Image (tube, rainbow, N blue to C red; front, side, top):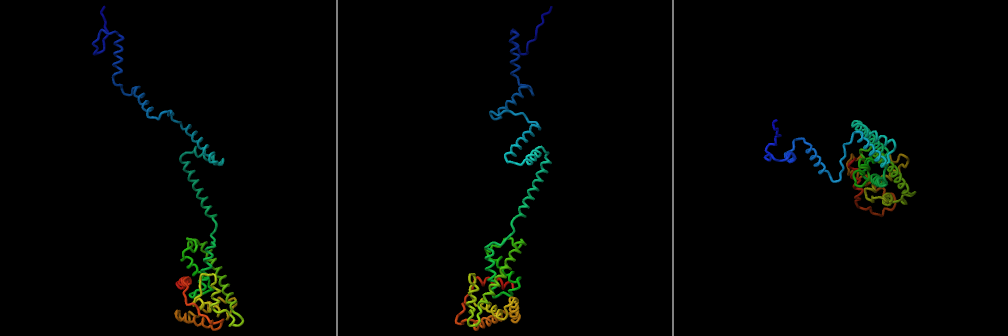
Amino acid sequence: MSDTRHPTPSGDSSSGLSPEAVAERELLATMSSPPPPNSLEDDEVDQLDLDQDAPAGTPSAPPLTSAASLRNELVVARRKAAQLKLHPYQCNAAEEFVKGSSGFKQMMLYIQLCAVENQIAGIKTAAPLFACSPQLLENIRSFVLAVLLSSKLSAYKKDSVPVGHVMTVLTSVPRSYVPDNLSGDSFALKTVKRAIQEELTQARARIKKMIKVSLATLPSESDSIFDLATTIVANTRSTVTVPLCARIALLRKVHVESCDGSYWDKVDARLLFIRNTADGVMWKITKAFEFILQADRNTYGDNAYTLPDTTDVYQSSVDDVVAATL
């Protein structure tokens, strides 16, 4: 019977070791060698590295399924809807929005944006209509009288003439309180023009009444042209000047000739006659008004006064606007 011996590991020079010692040496050699790829130790080390990178105390959460994620989104949506006190139908719409697809959500957002635009347009439509402020009306009153007293005015009754002059003055002076977009807002433009026309009617009536009151039964007992001019410009920005007195003298002359309902039409006709007769030459027109003024001074009131030889800066600025748009 032959003696069969078990081979010892290569490189083992201790042939006299016990089987237990040999096994221990084999295990030690195995664990000391590099680990093979995709071994269990690699996975454990990778997981250990991930655990070390995560903040301390952070529990590892398994990935949520689609259904679980939807449930969480619905819970958040309901909580937010309750916090903002949405109506029941809005809460239902929010839940449908959460459940919808990406295309459904984009469509709903677009529809809501259109609804908001419609509401904004409704708010603009419901805005109060333009109305002349007290400051604007005060400026209109001031400029209307200045235009009516201008020695350059070509017509009183033809509203397009004085209205255009007043509009030009309003839009050319600072702090006149006209809307910034007056030319682009047809309603505001009509409102301002209507206010000017109404003030023109009232101002013409006041001037005509003052002229009537200035005339007494006897011409010598009537107000002088200086007194009449002072009465007309009272509480206004205008002052008494020679050109102003000459224009008022013309108004009083026509009033004496005819004070019926066509009075202002006859005033316009007289102005047109003077311009046509003078062929538009300014010195001839000035000479005609000087003649009318001197005749008034010789006829009415006490002539023992001197008219102020001054220039009204405010009235002159209005006269320049009127002359530029003749």
